[in-house]
Image 1: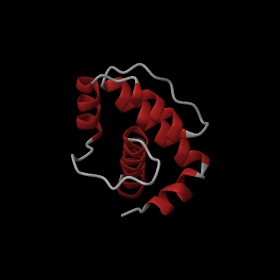
Image 2 (image 1 turned 180 degrees about the vertical axis):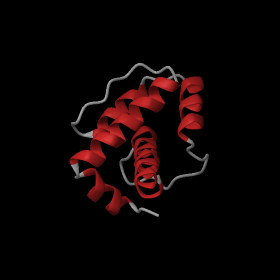
Image 3 (image 1 turned 180 degrees about the horizontal axis):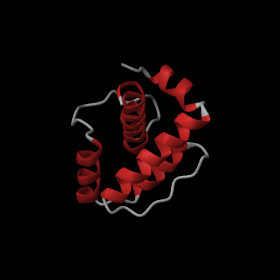
Image 4 (image 1 turned 90 degrees about the vertical axis):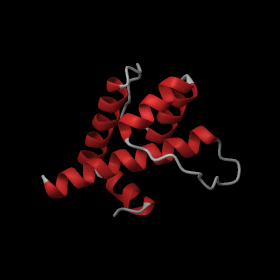
Length: 103
């Protein structure tokens, strides 16, 4: 599978980045969370959206994205929402990557 370095390399490609943002938008829309992602820095956009969510909305979003419930090792100074944003971005980018390889 893809590791975080490979994801970052893929996200540097405009087409992959656009597809990943579209996947993020699709899943947030399915969870009925109103947010609009742009081509700018993706992680801060996800983090800001997560901060505003209720616990119920967050659980629904994680279910729709298919993020497993695990304990994460937090980097120094990293908030829960920042780490969760990384996990969500990784999962969404993985969906785009797998779709491009197997569809």
